[in-house]
Image (cartoon, rainbow, N blue to C red; front, side, top):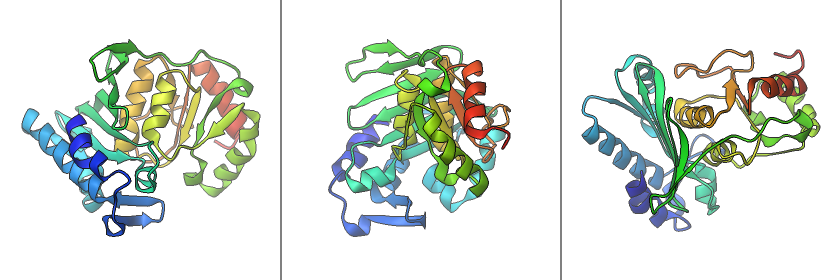
Length: 263
């Protein structure tokens, strides 16, 4: 991931030609030559290290959605998001990340969210915790923020992908928390959450490369996350939304504030 960031991502940062960026499904869904080149480097590297593993990259799966089926039953699989926050990257905003998760027979067991700008990475292993690893190899353990009431919570609510009725409810309810924002980059939002610099995240539209790494990172840092109805997040689930908080009690309190009886 670091090698791909250095060779394929950072040389293009703030140096993209206009024909190096294109829209996929809409104006907020971009891909660049750097995304495609970085995904190739990372995917090929994973296949060299783990022959026979299923590797599902965002750009490859955009062209062939059947690849998603391999995440559920493969003995070993990886998801690759070569540049999360492509809109920021294309706009020259230094807030984007590289994300990889590892799955064993449908269970997430490893995660890395690498920041190409600062050249550090947050990592997690199932049952072994989460940590920040700096370029010099120094490690710092990660812990989520202490639980607080919803009116003292800060975080991100990506409400624009919610169904219209639920979107309106959440948008009207957000002033009841202390502060909310949207960085257009799940990688950095998950990094903030897992390191205790915010209390909650809300997402809808659950492509695995966007959320499996952050889900494990947050869980191993001590946090609680679930679908809006309280059911656990699974790699094969692409809808249902996700809500994260420091623990289950604060999660329930936040859900009541944001959704009421709408879910």
